[in-house]
Length: 328
Ligand code: ATP
Image (tube, rainbow, N blue to C red; front, top):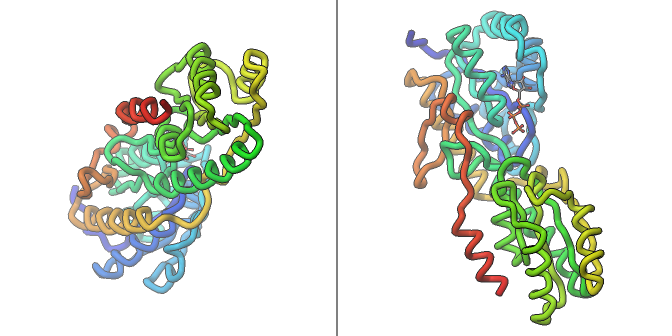
């Protein structure tokens, strides 16, 4: 059934990422442009269930394009995983005359949106906001580019210490299921080796590579390790292993953690967020639902939720080869 859209809700859900505020701003202003009312939904599905809504206008989103995090707050809601929870959320939307919504979040948030939309026939569009870039249907998720820049900057600083003391650093970066961040920052920061979930490098190859590096006269070495790498040891165990097998190395570990998710969004993420927000609102107005907005070949593209959440985004294998050549 084609809904005439008069009021659109916008929310952020799951883990926050830089660019979410820029996307909220874009959704709100695109609504104003098209004479559609806009309502901010606080704290993701949790706030939806409680009816934690606030009317938004073009000025409510001033001064946020450059801010990290999300002004609408984010949450994970157990209750929304139940039919009863989703029914409560639907009743609150009906009570507030919200007849469609845009969810900015990751694949979990889209799975929830898909189930909800099917149960209650409410139009919904998704904007992929996660630093991991682990969603199919877009070459870039919101926050990914900013995270790459944040991590490269951090590794550059670690490199200063590493080279002053002739040390080897294992730097752990985010990426439980996919190695996009590790692979790109590894190449961008000139890492000796990059350990990612998609490929088991093997401990022998790691040692061999570090030996080669030492012999070639390098004064410091950085190994970038994605959280979910498959080598079978965590970064601290890796440190011990390398120190046991290569006494010539003094090894340090740096786990970058949540600082990777924060900070002011890059220009790329701000522009991407602005484009995605407009596309999401205009798609809802034109009668499209249950899709995620993405970037493909520098054009805004829609991917149905079921494909976006089921697929597994693939790393660029060419980058692994480039990394090998660079560390010769
Ligand atoms: P991140 O990439 O940061 O993990 P995400 O959107 O994948 O972001 P999740 O915690 O997986 O984060 O999902 C956010 C919320 O979406 C959950 O707290 C829950 O309320 C809702 N959700 C996730 N999966 C489902 C599901 N199968 N059914 C209903 N709701 C769901």
